[in-house]
Length: 536
Ligand code: MRU
Image (tube, rainbow, N blue to C red):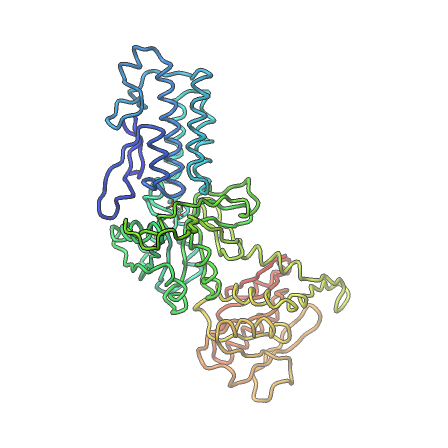
């Protein structure tokens, strides 16, 4: 496997990301200060990549302090001062046999490690990797180096697995159509050990023949999108166009985006995501347009110690990154600057976080919690033995109805052109979905309400039988119809609705409900995709 960062001859070898795309310059780091400078100036950047560089930085420190403490003969023979770019530092293979470090050397390594971990505060991968290699400090420098090598190899494997899983998910979310993906910043091989995260998923989708175009946000102010992501896409021969960051929302409104794929620098337990500045704006726009926003990251980016994103420290960077373009000042002298390098997107706007081992659905989890908070449980209603879940309080909250409608649209985007609501409560959410999706609404009514001619289907309920009717002319032939109700219980009503839609010559495309009572296995009676915001 070819890694973007490697350990060679006692030094960290990588590509200097500052000179791309014009020049592919190798970068050789042999000192802790060199590592810190490279990370701070974004010569090495991207959450996993800075974690790996930081881990090797601790190894450099340990080898140097170990060599200083070793015999003068071996220290001199290997020239292990670790500070020059000409090599000669201690190496994994050729280093002096440095064993456990004494107390003083260990303290010096810890101090270096703290400086490395602090040099960029937002991406948790850096402090995580530094803390991980430090657990091997009592065993000596070679153990630290071995741990850094393990992090490198694991990151490459994790990214590959996460990228494949994310590609599978995107194929599920956006089935049967050529995809236009939008991405932000750089999440490719340069930002990781190998393969990339979100860009890895895009490349995987391209390999599967699913990508028609990638829209690459330029990513002001340091242009990781237009400099690095565009370079990686060109290298992989994937069609792309660069847009300024402020064009992204309009591109979504114009129908140029099917899915937004981004990486992450830190993810809290509730699914809030810190990522490159501009991600939050993308998430707001994507939610407005019912476009899924998928975050791809290794587990090392998940900060299990953090309940929510409010605890994430956002790095603020130098003013001249904003006031100058390519070294030319573009703002008046003395202009004040606000330059956060990252933002935090609340989980409620994140369709999915995909790692090598799981798929989290923060937006859905948050919505399910809101639905739960607005549901009243009434036992023995309308007859004894029936557990009634009253969702009427949901409809007292317009913001919640709007979010439910948009969640349904995100799930079935591009798959329906009519909404059929089941009388009576299916009318409420169904109408909200039709309105937000700008498509027509058709009522599936109780018997005798619609003027003839009608199609009718009789079906069994938990408590008796009922009939649904649909006006014969209500749906054009071949219309793709999303069936909407509030609750999916035994599935009898939804199955009748699907049959009715089919009888009229239209195609049932899916079924969306707010609440699914899984114990009644209603989903099994339906041969169409079902989306339930909450399942109990
Ligand atoms: O400031 P940067 O360029 O290091 O920021 C990097 C990003 O925000 C990336 O999108 C993120 O680290 C994911 S990298 C796989």
